[in-house]
Amino acid sequence: MDVIKSQQISARPIDKAVVHPLVLLSIVDHYNRVARDSKKRVVGVLLGTSFKGTVDVTNSYAVPFEEDDKDPSIWFLDHNYHESMFSMFRRINAKEHVIGWYSSGPKLRENDLNIHALFNDYVPTPVLVIIDVQPKELGIPTKAYYAIEEVKENATQKSQKVFVHVPSEIAAHEVEEIGVEHLLRDVKDTTISTLATEVSGKLTALKGLDARLKEIYSYLDLIIEGKLPLNHEILYHLQDVFNLLPNLNVSELIKAFAVKTNDMMLVIYLSSLIRSVIALHNLINNKMLNKEHEKAEDAKPIAVSTAAGS
Image (cartoon, rainbow, N blue to C red):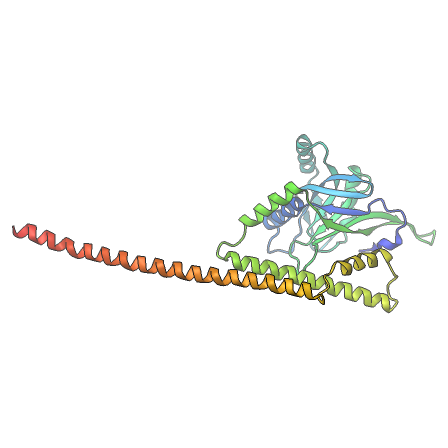
């Protein structure tokens, strides 16, 4: 599949694609229902708005889709289902329009340009977002593209459509963040303790930070070697990051860290002592209750036999 790098495009109709968490959850649910444990992919329609080159993907719905594994030119997408679903979605939110389509990929395929051409009837420049539902690396699981007409230098050759990569990011409104947080809290494994969940979350965050630092390191190495052009905007952001880092050589800061750490360790130590004392107290109470129950049980047969003898 032909893809032109973004640096080769001077006038870009789409500068950025912003995907909301609701779209990601909907696509993952679609994949788990239809194509889980198989080599098939799922396809659906993206809804949202577009303003000044930024495509805001706020909603989506699945569409019945089939393709031949042996012959990529043979595929089927249910137009009637798409039309009926879009009409129902417009009744709920008239501001959302068809802005493109999604695929579970995880990569571009030969018939994607033909599928992409169908959405030109709904939007002048549709966007294709490929969602990696089973990511193997940390990072954003989305890749966005739009199609342009590539004109050949040789006049005898026909022009053809090619995909252009578009930067994508994950963003959400405050209401969406609260809803997604509650949803993720409900789907967590109940057999795992809260502490283990927090530790795994911290570990995942540290792995992501490590991957970003390595990416920055390799990027700066390529600039030094002259393999990449110097981008002042990126370097300004990196300088801001370095300026915001605390100076660990200041004695007052070292003392503040030590005091804070000692206070936290003291609280943890006192909490452990209190928990041990409470556990011991409950154990003694249980022993006393068990002895009282045993005495009561031993007293019952004697009372019965005395009544029988009389």
